[in-house]
Length: 385
Image (cartoon, rainbow, N blue to C red; front, top):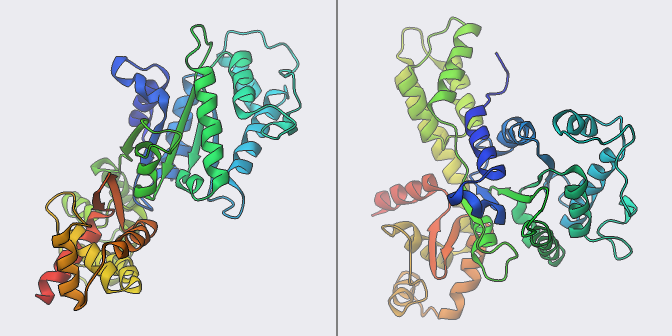
C-alpha cells in the first residue's frame, strides 16, 4: 500500500473544473483560494494529488511555498520559480520539456524553447515582467500555466508581496481575455490562516478581489478506512471500530497527524481486554483539549479586553456583528470595570486576526477561525459560570 493516502477522484474533478470549466466554473479562472486549518493535509494534497492531476490534463504547473524561506521576499520566490521553469523549457534534457513533448501535439524540435529575453532578468527592472514572461510561456507551449502558491497569506504581510500579487493579476489579465489565447493562466493560493486568505478575495485593495475562495476539502471516512487497513496488516493488537476512529478524527479537527498520535497512544496504553473504542474517545478528547488550550492561551497574552472581544465573537449564534456598537462597549466596560472606548477595539481585533484566532467574513462580520477552539471556549465559559 502507498505510504501516502491519495485522493485522485477529488483532484481530477478539481483539475477539470480549473482547466475545462463549465459555465458555472468559469469564475475559477479569476483565481482559486483554498483555506484550511493547519496540519489537515493541504500541502500533501497539492503535491501528491492536485499537481499530478493538472499535469495529466496537460497543464504546466509552477509550485512554490512561501514558508520554504520565511526571510525571503515573496516576489523573489516567485521570480526564482518562474526562472527555474524557463530554464527547464530551454533544456531538452529536462523532465518538464520531455513531458510537454509527449502530451502536446506540437513540434518543439530537438532543442529547448527559445525566448526573446534572458530568463535571469525576469521580474527585474531590466527584464520582462511576470506578465510578459508567462505570456511567452503560454504562447510557446500552447497550454495552460497553473501557478500554485502555498501559504499565500504571507504575500500580503509586506508591500513587496502586495506588489507581487498585483503583478500576477496583471499576468492573468494579459493572458486570459485574449480571444484566441492558446492557453490560460490560472492562479491557486492556499493557506492555513483563514482570515488572511479570505481577505485576499474580499478586500477591495487586494489584487484578486472577487476570485473564488473555498474551504480545503478535509479528509473523511475513506482515509480512516485506509489507515485502519494498514494498521491491521502491521500488528495484531485490538483496533477501534471505523465509527469510533472517524469520530475521534473529527474530534481532532480532521488532522491526520493528531489521529496517528491518538492511535499510537492507544496502542501503547490500552490495557488487556479493554474496549479500544472507549479509550480512543478519551485520548482524542484529551489531545483536542490540549490543542485548544494552546490556542486559547494566546488570548490571555493579549489581555482582558481582547478576551472580552473574543468572547463576543465565540458566543454569537452564527457570525458576530456590532463589535464596536454602544451596547458592546457597555458590555466590555462592565466586564473590565472601567470605561472602554471604541478606538481600543480595532488594534486588539487586529491582534486576534493576526493570531489566526478570528477571521473577518465580511465588513464588520467576524467568526472564530477554528470551530474546536470556539467549542472549548464555550465549554470553559459554562464551567466558570
